Image 1 (cartoon, rainbow, N blue to C red):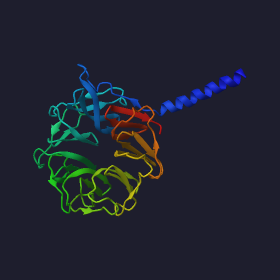
Image 2: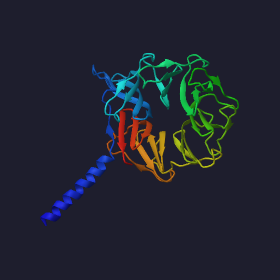
Image 3: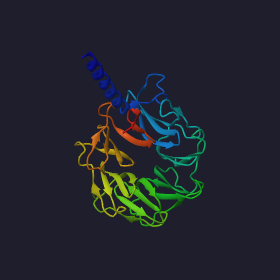
Image 4: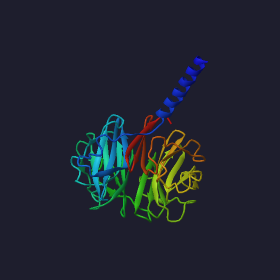
Length: 327
């Protein structure tokens, strides 16, 4: 009987270890910089990876309601520690999006255009030749040697020389409030605020609307690919297209009520959805069913960014960065 009891204890311990391997862990060492006890929270709105490096755009809030942008932070050890890498960026600047092209890191900012770093974020240079002044950059996407930026109110701009020069590529766009861009081979998709999704197969020289099945006046905030499937986040819902955007079907109907989706990430058969106040959900069957994967996350947490680096998953939240693996 004693031996059976010991085996039972061992079995329960193994189960507990497996559960812990899949739980989320806060990894914010170096981000909060709460040297005078004024920061109440660190809000991470975008995360990008470059080999072993992870870049996060951080905003902090105070206990009296004010917010401050504290720029870009770098981790080279899976989030165990972070270092500010803002040399050359304007002070108190909001970085809306980060994209990586080899050694080049592009940061799209609020009201200051695009910045480039080629040394892990240690130095940044403004690369705005040809871009409108004081523009909000909401999205950046890479297509081989082409870099596309999505501007609020100014449409899409293209650079084929690592951002040295830019030109507008807006023929066919009826809505210039670009909120997301993604590239798959020669195909480019641009999401708008209030105008749905647009498609181009010729470097943005011509765009056509691809909104069949989407709500009228859709706000497309995220675009992700899964082989031949395309997923978008529109008005807080997830939609799937199996025909390059010609038609769309909602695939988040199994999520709990009021699960407003902010971001998604795709790896293999898995789709991860970051929501408002309901944490993270996982689907392995094209969005037909969803499972909460929130062990270790605070309750009612907003997840604004999800990025996958190998077996590691990063979640940018209104309470900093959380990391998990093995799902």
